[in-house]
Image (cartoon, rainbow, N blue to C red):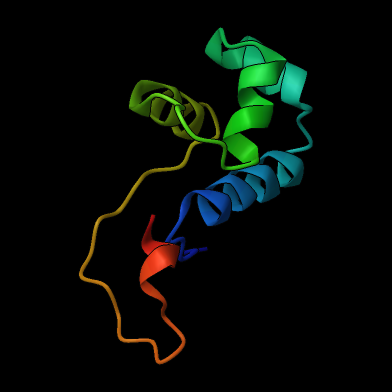
Length: 83
C-alpha cells in the first residue's frame, strides 16, 4: 500500500503504522536494525536530527522502500509542511 508523506511527522507516522502492522515493538525493530529503542521513537515522532542512514535501515527492516516523485498539487498544501 502506497502512503504519501510530506514531512517528518508523516514519515514517522507511516513507519509507526507499518511497524505495528508487522506486530513489532520499537525495541524489536531496534534489534533488527542495531538501533536503540529511543532512536526508533525519535524517528517515529518526526524529531529532527535523525540520520538518513537510520531512516534507510528502518525502511529496509520493515521491507519498505522510499519512492521520490513529483509533488502532487494540493490546495491545502502549506510551505511549512514541506520541512
